[in-house]
Length: 53
Picture 1: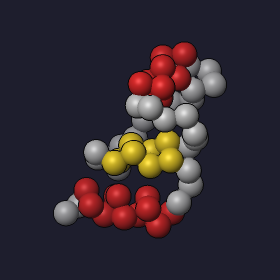
Picture 2: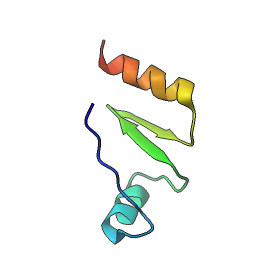
Picture 3: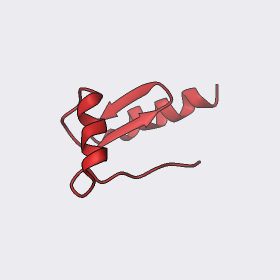
Picture 4: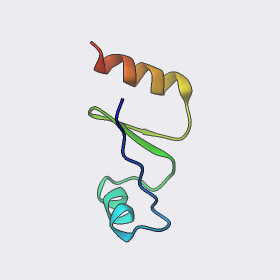
């Protein structure tokens, strides 16, 4: 599965995108239309599973 990694500590544009999403905590994962914050493997698996239908 393809992904894009963005480092908000080094990339001002990535930091701006995070702020535009209304999110301030890290990590952030955008999976489909879901916005996940923090590290929660169960939620990540659930979101990835929803992509496969």
